[in-house]
Image (tube, rainbow, N blue to C red):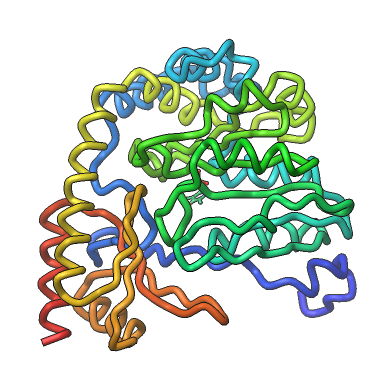
Length: 353
Ligand SMILES: *Cc1c(COP(=O)(O)O)cnc(C)c1O
């Protein structure tokens, strides 16, 4: 549509969020969007097959009850009413911003972190405020300062692109000093030593989002969820699409909750690869931030990050080049299989030689 005057001004002004490149399968070794390099648990694939043989002419369960029961059990929550299922955790984030932040009101996020939060604020006609991490990736006190217009604070934990974490103790203190909800986006928590799930029961204003896209190898089915107190879940459920999750993904996600052993194995394997990758990059002269996620953020003193990204791409390896104004640039490399990481490291060595 050429005539933007029909659009709400907030939309006419905003820039679209640019997700990482998704090339046709097989063309690249894909280390750019933090997907799991391993296929999902076989039980999940089987559950999708079974569901495909079911009544596809019928609408799915609007609240994904089977999943909520399985998730509550797997995560030791008091009950299914503490869980809201979404079409990816990105949809959950959309619901949170839609539910809590009105036009002209403010949301806060750390910097550098997940850029999508800004897009969600823009759609809402809201204002976003970034609080920069300190040099050691800890959060300054300003992140917990309350403010009349502030309606929502979002914290990816582990953070992207750094892979660093803020401790649950600190998150709890931040929530106490703020007087609006604090969302802990735990997309990568399955690769971390600690998480904030237990805080949800202590403070109504702490909410945790999770996704099956990263640790469970299910980015292709689009399933994420929110853990929050039941009275919050009930309110947010009012603003979701009636059938926001389809029957096949509900079946897949429900089965995934029973795959704890599979998850444990993949976690260990990927953490070992992460360590090896970080050590090797360090030995090549990179500054590597210690990561608790399934990627590492690295910067080389030669500063040729974009050139290295291009070189890798020419050689069929995709990593994420990221540039943060007034902060700097670098490469975020997802943890792949050992083979994929070996290929990537070999090319980097060749580039630097
Ligand atoms: C990948 C990612 C998500 C999105 O997950 P989906 O469930 O695939 O929508 C949310 N937050 C962060 C920080 C992520 O990196």
